[in-house]
Image: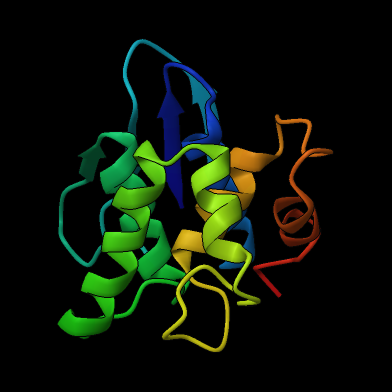
Length: 146
């Protein structure tokens, strides 16, 4: 069991919640002054005798993505996905539209299935009118977590 507390529910928090649901992790969500995730002691994902808290949406997202296996353990593939996540944080819709216009199915060309980067991008796209972006519109309708 774990607890997710967040200050503002943005696309990162939506991606964290979607990833936890996909991984079938028991969790509670509450809004508060800080953003952190707390793993209870001696639980499925924490074998320590004390609770462990991870702060910051980016760190939390990478942690739960690792639990859900949408973020790999090997350093090269993890680096590729993290590079795409960092790129997404600053990319405009036009930037992402241009990238997807080459016909790729998922954001990280090196992978044949969705990754944490796709989960984050689709969470980010939910709030936009994508009528002027045909590739993004098509991409948003994909289901990254099956």
